[in-house]
Image (tube, helix red, strand yellow):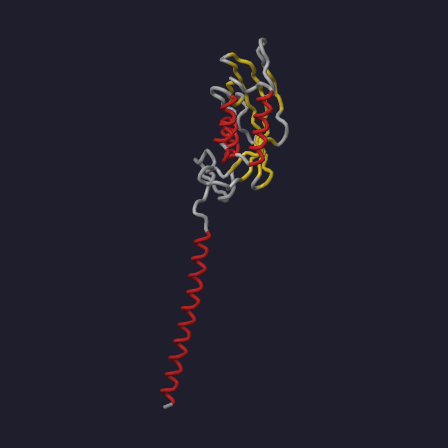
Length: 216
């Protein structure tokens, strides 16, 4: 009789152990499901331009070369007025809003008004490009912290009025770039321009004798 009582007791203990293990496994499964739901669906990884020698870096680290190319591309597009600056400049600000912080958008809107009041936009055509020999270098980008950078762009700004050149300015633009996870559908870079870190500096200027334009 004692033999049967021990067998029943061992069986009950084994069943209890199995139930405990099942409970632990269920808790782990729930934790895994929660982690899976909270994990990001898309992950942006920034690779350096030259991958011939390979690259090992944390996934969240943005190389300075990537920050520079982003700042140059967006800023160049902002200042590309193919027909009429009075229409092209506000349209570019709107089209590139996903790559601009709200504070930078407000600053640019005020600049549009200032330029319009000064007669610097109507029928103005504008292009920007790098000064030859002053492209990206290790000194072009200052890393403030993981999410903030200052990019120095040495650019030529050419402006025309009815196909007549009115201004050529060589300027250093110190642009603030921040990490920006606002709208991944419209902004795949995960970065945004925060306008100027300080006042742009005129490097040198060459203006036509017939007419001089406004500020850069």
